[in-house]
Image 1 (tube, helix red, strand yellow):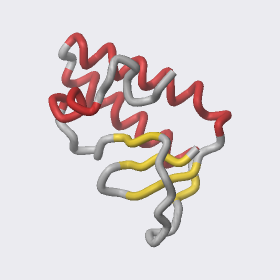
Image 2: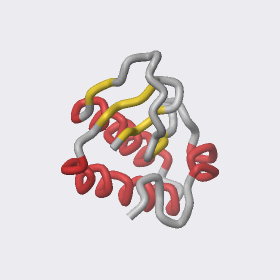
Image 3: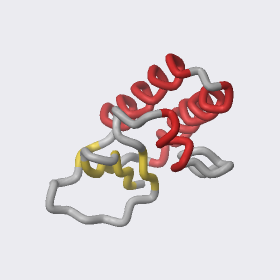
Image 4: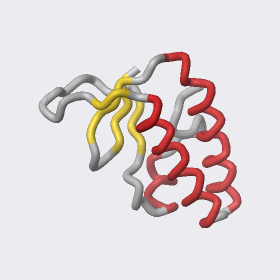
Length: 92
């Protein structure tokens, strides 16, 4: 799967990492619903770090269709709320 981190680029991830990313997405969604800003910041960082750690960056000139689009590390809680659907950032 190809994941885009806004403002950074694209990363190719094996589908086997979906469960870990989905768990972090569920945590992020819960923190957003409760308005837990510190938890949101922590979990967003963990989600982005996991994508970077588990994935392989695509070259800057590669333009692959992204299956997932994740917010930039400095995105606000309100900005991410606007990105979310009922399924969270990672569709189930």
